[in-house]
Amino acid sequence: QLQLVESGGGLVQPGGSLRLSCTASGFTLNYYPIGWFRQAPGKEREGVSCISSSGGSTIFADSVKGRFTISRDNAKNTVYLQMNSLKPEDTAVYYCAADASWLFKKCAPDEYDHWGPGTQVTVSS
Image 1 (cartoon, rainbow, N blue to C red):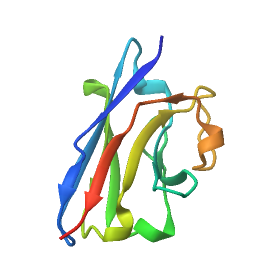
Image 2: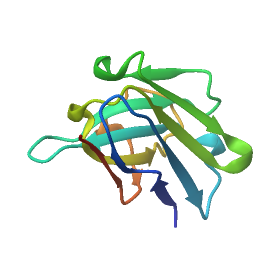
Image 3: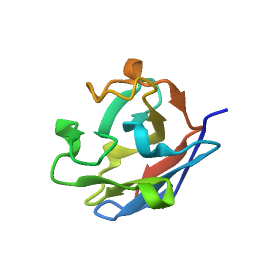
């Protein structure tokens, strides 16, 4: 059973930073594109950032470009989302997901198959 677990969420003031981690158990992440997605109350789940299996290609939503970075450490079976200059509108539950096709396509929720339970990020003063 492919399982992903997110960690690193919490409460942060506007302008602050958080680093989210996505760790796999039961399988190696090395072959999978990994995406970070978020869902705010009353809104649809949206793609935040995705990274190819090698880490050589990345996609970012326009709303986070220049503020968020994505990286992976395949030796640690972990993908990271570094979030800087956080804004109240970044408040959401953040999910990581793996694409079982192993193909790096668009950063959209319907392209990804295996999901973690999510971690809450709240940006508020």
